Image (cartoon, rainbow, N blue to C red; front, top):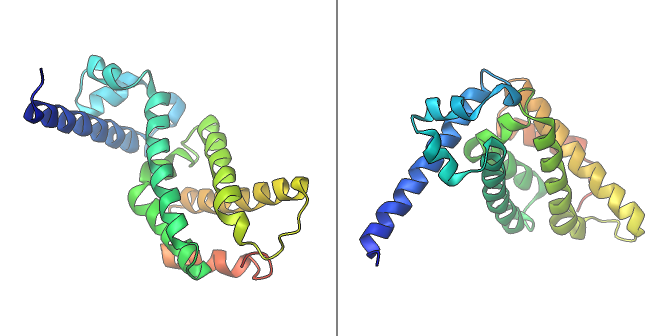
Length: 191
């Protein structure tokens, strides 16, 4: 039987391994395209064995999916808490979260990222926009088809702005970018 202390040490090792693999992928994405990065590259950069990598992940895509799930879950929770705030603050906190806690996610949507991952993230954003943003829009008498296309429109617009920001080296601060988004999305569209 495993003691509580042994279990805590094991959990700490797992967290350390996951952090180091994510950091490795992050640093690799700064210089290489996702498709050119191998598990071997990640392991060498993270200073872990391939066996250790495969204890936690099936492949590099599984690494990204696990990370994306965790970061999206945390981001969604924060968005829900901010929906009652001023729209500008919502944008600011979303961008601030992405730039400070989801840097790997930002690199995955950059030019060095993967189109498959980008499409998966767009679907996640669409789901979250439908669930968390659509109920707050001013015009709520959409048909189901209009609602679907509205959600696609708003989530792809935000995704495109963030992607452009990342590809241009994040020259604007999160405050400046949130001001831009707040200015270009008309008040008549969102409440």
